[in-house]
Image 1 (cartoon, rainbow over the protein chains, first blue to last red):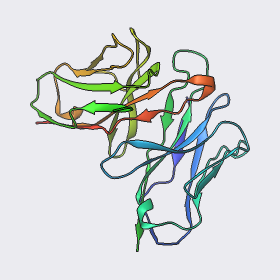
Image 2 (image 1 turned 90 degrees about the horizontal axis):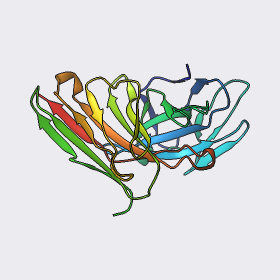
Image 3 (image 1 turned 135 degrees about the vertical axis):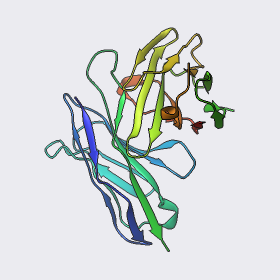
Image 4 (image 1 turned 60 degrees about the vertical axis):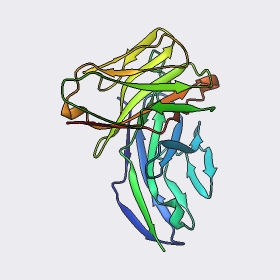
Length: 116
Length: 114
């Protein structure tokens, strides 16, 4: 079945460092891809998304490009801030027809800590 | 308030008791979901609903019951709570319009079963 694999955390960076969180997926069909962020004590928030190959999602300085040839959707940010400390989840949508169409499949999450 | 809300935010219950977690959304989204979040497992889908009176099992449905008599509400019931059901529970909704499958999450309910 469809699955998402993302790098294990935790990831600890200094402020203004470059961030990459790797995400690869296995899917039949053509899923949409998402990055969600979870701040301490809160629910998940959509950070960015891409719906087809070569699309780049971007938001708040974060970017990710939908790479069909490598089945990847790596999250990047050029200069992280302390306020970016959170858990980041990669996810794909099930676009197969049927009752589960549109259900999201999540990776296990990567905890990011940014030190001043 | 607009959005998706969950209640209670925190709950402590004893093994064997029945407990219901509430979820309410104001967007009239057709789809609603219940997840549990546990260390090492990420988010796992318990049940989902495509519309009022239509529900289906997710990855880990055992020990849980759902209903959806109204579009805006999607309660999750633990019929006889067990310690393994100690977790953080998230409700989410989605409108699935034009293949836009992004989900919107509530703030979560932290449930402890003693």
